[in-house]
Image 1 (cartoon, one colour):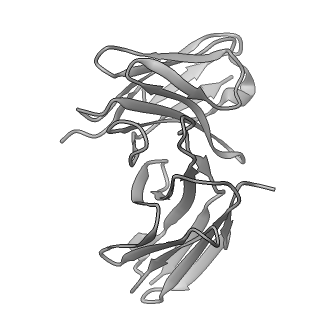
Image 2 (cartoon, chains in turn orange, green):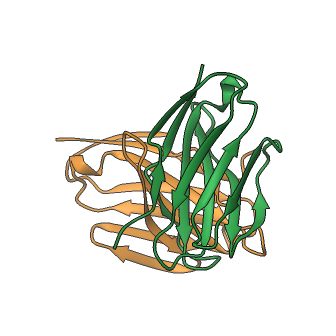
Length: 110
Length: 112
């Protein structure tokens, strides 16, 4: 069993729809990261959070530490949001390389 | 402010050769991380350097090694290249440890 599980693996939606991507983890963490990867490989850090909720533009990330679960929401989705979204966790305590989920491939159709 | 830079963009080597990949972190960042993204395997943690020292390594053989220089730039060396080392190698940096990581564009290594 992977330490970080994401769902769904693939998601196709229409422009304007509300998008939710889920992430569950099985280990203790110091922080959870949401990353965006576009074709060609470049990775952008969207959020790093250890509790509660963060919002940036149309993106919202939440985390429930007790349930070991996080969600990434995209409001008013747009074709430019099409990308792979990756959940990753850092364990801290001197072992700070990220452990990644397999990613969610999101396609927003016009 | 310049982001994380990596060189070269692409690198083609043959099996058994050595590859050297370079990373320059964002100015002021002291931690550098290396990750491998091989086709079908997803992203995997390789190495973490902080303040010039190797702090942690992932589940990779010793032929994957590196170092961090006094200016905090870093080098990843892969010796005795194997076909399965073909991957995108990503470098990330953070301001001190346990902070948000910012990724470079990657080096695509192809082993023939």
